[in-house]
Length: 97
Length: 361
Image (cartoon, rainbow over all chains, first blue to last red; front, side, top):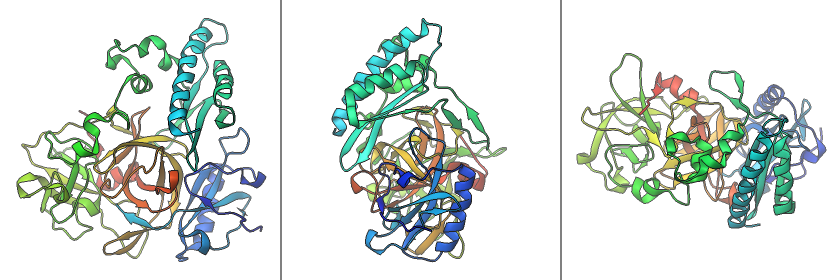
């Protein structure tokens, strides 16, 4: 599986996905669970979720979002899991507010 | 373009939309669907977001490209679907009647307007919050309303998310987070809850109720909610209305959903859901790190959507007036201008865990 080349800032513009199309929400959910399990316990990761994946005019496609604490200390994450695209965003540390 | 230019361009486009949609209704093609908003590109760059269904809306979309050029994000999305909280999707076509220019007239009674029209015609906004401004929400206020400063006596300050009730139980409850009303499981049931919170000058004389129940925060396994209830004293009056009016229904979050909240620290803010079903979210509490699954992430439209003290705010869809989540945490990175992200429990999970429903005015 290809490695991620870029880490995005979370909450910013939706990525092109390097041309990867999105998947159904169910497929994205399943891929998310699989990736979350494989990254469980990695303190560099903070939240693995589902996001819309905008490619062209499609808005019904989804992908997986891996949140990381720091851009310069992120784990290697595949570009796709079971055909579902993955992107990595920096979210920092999360505090009860 | 900057945020001010984006807002002005949006208003210009909406004026165009009112004209175009009026013309469309006289034809045979039938009304089209249209959504116009501000697109957040990040790094201080904003633009127009236009979503249309390819009919009359397409003309407006073309005008958006004229006005905003490369800053226009125009998509033909077909039918707009609202995901309702009963677990099944419902198809809701955007009704251009909601943008009827006659209904935008300031003389039209607010009750006759749809939520979209109220927004366009002068309802409270982040720029004009009125009584939903942070400085007002931090005061001692009666009757109680959502957004006000509140906390268990040992906690600094959080926010009143709303008011709820249980079937067959006459008690009115105030809804907020466990770490606001129960001091993260350290407070005794029956201990006083103050409005405003102590950080805003609240004392024992400002008690409005007693801690009733909190969903325990588990350290050894993932949580879904950080929520608690305070049973309100009989003589405390409440006003369960938000800037958009009553919020009594719920909806599941989806990425891209525009949302709003009122909170003690940042007042009335707007943003959008930017990720859903987040698992393995590690949140720092005074007692340690607590992990959450199935969380909703929100990014502010103009800076931070929330800050410390906004915990407990109810996050809702201002167009449908459906609740989306209970705000409980924030991050230090990401989001508009790097102002950080906001995290919410899915609202249905909160209400189900507590066995309550949102109260109507």
